[in-house]
Image (cartoon, rainbow, N blue to C red; front, side, top):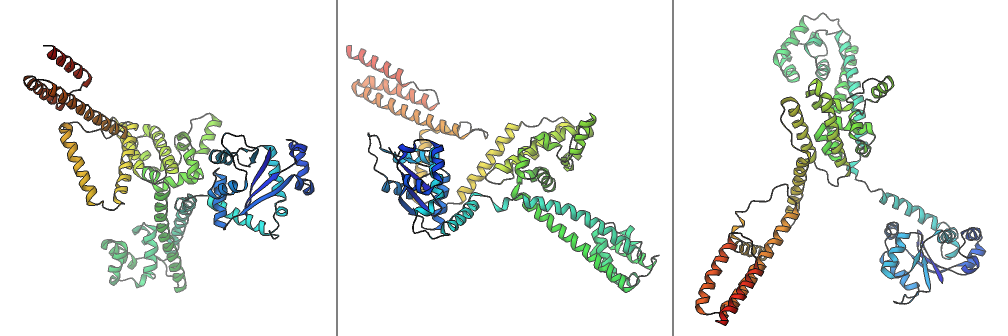
Length: 555
């Protein structure tokens, strides 16, 4: 049996014929020894066909399909053109050796070409890969390496499929920078207060905010020049006219020492730097909020952007956080306390970074541990939805937040919360409704003919089933299967009614006029019963009518 080798290179598809396999046998060790020697290997394996790729994009598409185990149209035409034809009902006298078993099974399903993939085949293909440049005569030295390098880069870029807007590394860097900025702004603001207090010590007691203090230090400069004319400007900075007057009066009776103009200039420059850092910190916080809404919207809506970002940064990534169980998430950030408690056999910590959430602070002292456990459970669910969901939505996070609020009320007031399954069903329905609304808004307005058809269908349905309006509507938690079942039942009832009418018409033609009147009365009664919604039994009715007609004929 002839053995053909399919080799997928960076430059194109190639087909080799392996001869003299009876001498070597199906022995992988013998093939390994002959692969290194081109003279021996060249006698066994010979090139029969080569199909180059048209472009780098074509090469990438072919490489992607081969890696996924799919046969493209180009590969199918190449194989059917260069391999012997497969006849139905007859055994093939050849087989195709491939490196990927999935690709071989797909080729066999589509073209009925027998394929094989084993260690022996892989050794032969290794030899083909080693001496491929010698088999193709038109290849220049270095062309194959360039093709392999370009295809490798493009394949790697295409294989790493990620959304640029959902890179959690940016959140990790932003929260680290936010924490360091908070520390730096705090220390720099203290330095401004100490420095300017030598000149104007009373200002510290009047203004407590660091940003406002730096702004005032830059604006006032020399306290001796501060007069009542600057009260409106001070009011704009402080937002309070009384405090502005208090600053002016304190400057008049200040006990601070005078500073030289150079020292005041340095204080002003440093205060400006602190102001710039504070403004940058606000912008960074806004950036963190937007990134968290893109990456983990449910976690952000449940526990807040800053706490959610701290959890992601501590876990290493959103995927790692999603893999953590809720018990691990609960004490994330309190590892030292945990291991200390395990070592000393003391009480383990109840919460870690999750303590910064407002829910833990609102809970009473004896319910803080319970609340932390419940909140960690909901955070675990939210992080998994954010990590593995295709579309970002805040509906689940909002529903989970409502559950946490209900749990707080349950601990404080004893109000029973909703069940988790009911809340999740409501969240799924709201997401489906949102997707449906988006789909209906996207297409254009349908034509007048379609609207007329829809109107006629709706009118016919109303005529056929007048009691449909009185029936109770499907519960919001119901599935789409219930709607399908109700539609099938309606169709069956219509068919039964049509069958009954046909049978009654035939009986009315065969019977007498008096019997027709009686039958008409019976029909009216049956119709009224059908309209009242009672179950119809067409088979039994038909049998009774047949018996009556027979007895009437005998009379």
